[in-house]
Amino acid sequence: MTDFFNFADLTWPEVASLRRDCPLVIGLGEGYPLEKLAEALENPARLGLLPSIPYGWRGSGLAVLEALLGKYVSNLVDSLREDGFSRVYALTPPGIDLGLGADRLVLLSNARPSTCLPPDEQRGKVILIPVGHTEQHGYHLPLSVDTLCIEAVSQGTAAAVPGQAYSLPVMPYGVSTHRASFAGTLNAGGRAFEDFYLGVLDVLVGRGFDRIYLFSGHGGNCSFMNNVIKYAGERHPQAFIATTWLYLNGPKGTAALEKYRESKLGGLGHACELETSLTLHLRPELVHMERVVDEIDFITTPSYYMDWVEGGALVANPPWLDDTRTGAYGAGSLGTADKGRVWLQAAIEEKVDHVAEIQAQFSRRQERREQRQL
Image (cartoon, rainbow, N blue to C red):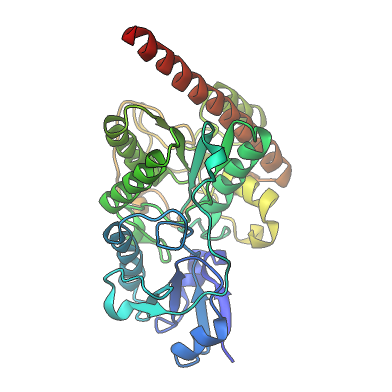
């Protein structure tokens, strides 16, 4: 009998120890019969299920051109192959050809048809697009940290102001330009990421959703999101489409971080005091505090350093192995569930304020355009 496991629940050392002939599967949507999946792969002893891709494909309710999705998925598959895994597959419903050849499996899903496209009555609200990632977070945190955190922020924001915001499902894959250093980190590719999300925005704006907030739980996505927003602003001048750096980055958010943090500069970075606290609050069963290794020896100069709210005049991307042995940047040992609860609420409040600003920007710009036409 096949042992199915959730790949993103693992830490990177656990991924590193997996047999390289262990099948790994990325599904378009959910609800596939696992016994048929195992049968299609000749009933392996173990089979890893990666987070499913919630939209972008025909049948998801929010489809882009298959060539855009195909490149996105192909890059994810290639990431795992570069780590030495020889049996990596994309699982799709019938009739979807992503150009993956032998890397594609086809099964009927038992799930209800997806409805990722916001219902028509959500027009006039800010559409929240949270993007996480599946990547290493040191010895003690699962690969799913960025996805778990930004999903909670987005859902909390939509619940706090349901008349003003609507959240899409979280996308669990983004961009990691440093992925080769540690096993299990995926990479959708910067250009593929930009093209895919431009396609998503084209669909949303084309259906009348003209206030959109694209945000990330993973720092590696943010520069590419900036490019998406620049292109989208030119392409869709009637809409107001915005992004930002992660969360807890404005005056209220940074004040909350400073009030409760115990670490010094460099303690909040990656698999750090903040992300450990949030994961302890959200999914404590996935945290292995006995494995924590604090790493705060980042090579720091006045204009280039590592902390949650990045600062300084220099932008660079040096090898991670220069600054970390375990994949962590920061003081994970100082994380607590209580801090995670407080910081999550602060992040939601910050996003609620952003939703109000996006609504105000859209309305005031519409009024100005109308006045100029008189």
